[in-house]
Image 1 (tube, rainbow, N blue to C red):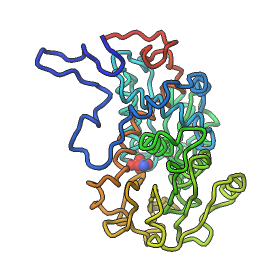
Image 2 (cartoon, rainbow, N blue to C red):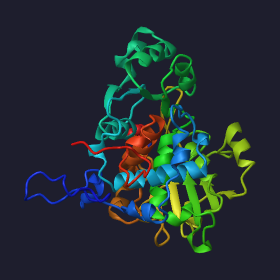
Image 3 (tube, rainbow, N blue to C red):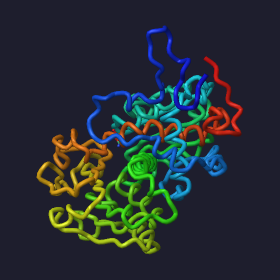
Length: 381
Ligand code: CP
């Protein structure tokens, strides 16, 4: 019997210890860096808002602006429950097919989505590179979308062009998840970022966050030119009770574009622009850093003058986040330190993407009752 955390009957053979099949990363003691325990987020408050999660059923996910603070917390709590519970034998995505259509390079996003689907017993078909699709013959994204309707239940797409999701949605009738569109958005990366952050400091979920727990956030990157930074900042604006101040380090005089300016007009979070990381590094609790952006048909480095390495005077207990891939802006020397939250971001992405897929695909009722008390999910080996 499963007690919700340990799958006592999962082991095959008397010599095997009980294992938690969803807990691959925490079982790997060799993984360097800080690895906040997902149980912290499950235990702070037992309630997962399943009604809110059910509202995602059948919805396409194109922008981080679709996620309220309540939704980010609900998805993160579900992700934490998935990370600490044996769910594989419930086959939550049984019979469903996802297409990962990547018209731009990826290591983490495509593979973590595919891992998320496969570990829940969904199936995956992949276009790992646009050059192997009909686009090589001049086929439009809209026409490709019409084909996808017949082949799958959900499409996860990355594209170099900001407007590609609007083009495919002209014909697509199954949900679309935007896995990065040009310099515009990467909403599920921002979910992975906030999941890592909330596991690190679960008190950030509270309606009123104690002064000692509130964070000073330092963002090294240009939100107006980098999709991960834009989406992370957009979600940060949902947490005014948890953030004391945001300092942005950018080589641009104005690091925002028009749409960000109109979002920022509505926030009461204190926002400042920093010129030198050295001046602020001792005060910052969380550094979010990125330097790669895809623009004008190729990759460019932006803000790479700001570097985080062993010489950076980081505050005790401060964490460094990075969506990865990295270049010289983030030194590998930090990998083995407790400042490294970036590997936890990448590992936890599987669970937050599982939480999103289960919600969008309407399979909350296939979860174990230890997670969703109203579920009719049955364990089947
Ligand atoms: N964070 C991220 O989007 O990584 P990939 O480009 O490897 O998917």
